[in-house]
Length: 262
Image (tube, rainbow, N blue to C red; front, side, top):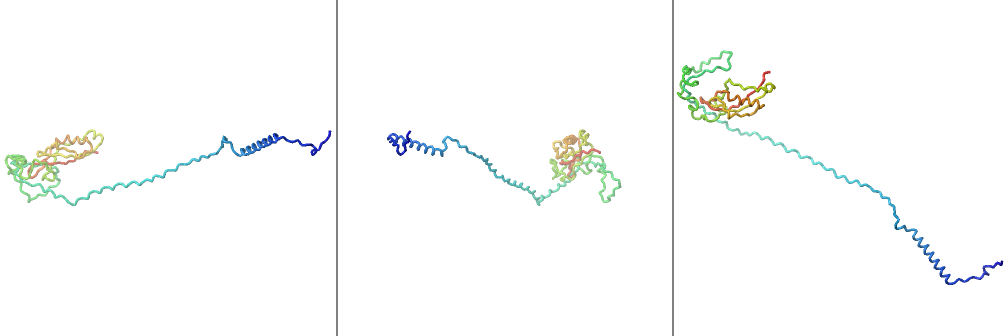
């Protein structure tokens, strides 16, 4: 075997096709190398990126506190009206009309309170007329009275109206009760130990009787007390009010007290 030096080996000449193929091959390799390098730094379009998102819960702002408006002060209490200095003129006193009493005699009434001492004798008093105690004629009359007169409407003089009801301050002699009928204490209230009072208003006519239609209750502590007073009044008798010698009707306000004995 014979060794041949490189410089002595004859060089083979490449054909133009081979050179062209080599150029194309190297160009393709270079292109793919550049493309692969460029694509290495670009993320894939379909790659899903995970992102951490922190959700912060925002607390809604609190509404401003509602200011409590101070309550308006209560309206001032109305001041009581000042008493008027004007005083109504007092009513004129009822006219004292002296009328002729009926022809008759005087009647002595037993005293309600019996004195324990002998009263002093008034020597200046008018001497009693014996004729006034004759027992003849109309009781309560006078020996100098008018025959046939009853001392009421028939004998009334000018200024006395026997068709009206007078107040107590308008008469000379107010109504006075005659003992006899008392108001019955309701048994139901008595057994329960209930006490009370009734203030009633009514008219006593010239005959000393209560006119039932004028009965009125001004105040009462119990309806049972009211019923007891209303039932007893028609049976009560009174001395009629008088102006002069004339009997007149009078408005009466009377309290009926119901009190148990302890």
